[in-house]
Length: 153
Image 1 (spheres, one colour):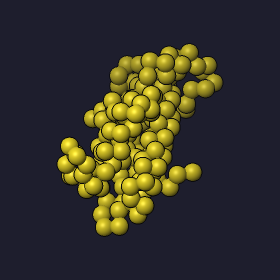
Image 2 (image 1 turned 90 degrees about the vertical axis):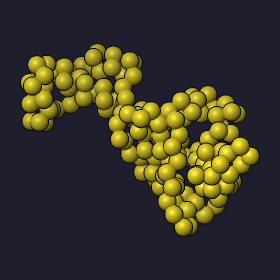
Image 3 (image 1 turned 90 degrees about the horizontal axis):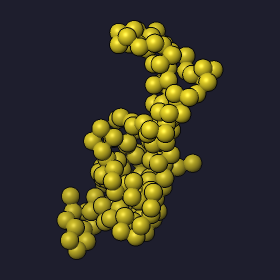
Image 4 (image 1 turned 30 degrees about the horizontal axis):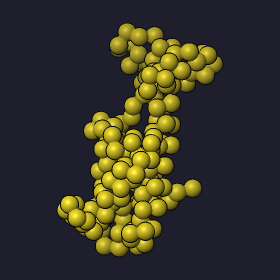
């Protein structure tokens, strides 16, 4: 189990997750809190439909948590090669801004490295050499280890 936290400033739901929640048996729907029931009423939707939305959100968060863990683990591998004294402390899924933020602890400071969702997705879905090198360059840049063409932050 990794030694970093995964956080969400927001989450997303895929079409597949939405459909899965819409087709889930009623027995799998989450029990709504009083506050959630009030929101459903305020928007004029049934409690069942609201519960299906909550379930879809849970599916989306589960997917993002898995992806964040994989991304953090890969950054930890990069750190083993470039900075043995630094470590990942958090991975933030900031989907409202279409990015991930990898938070590192160095011996002297904490640094947040933003990674666009596009680059993160390319890395996680395809593991291309280009995406891997881009992620590595962002980590090095965030640590102040600028490379040719990359200026330290």
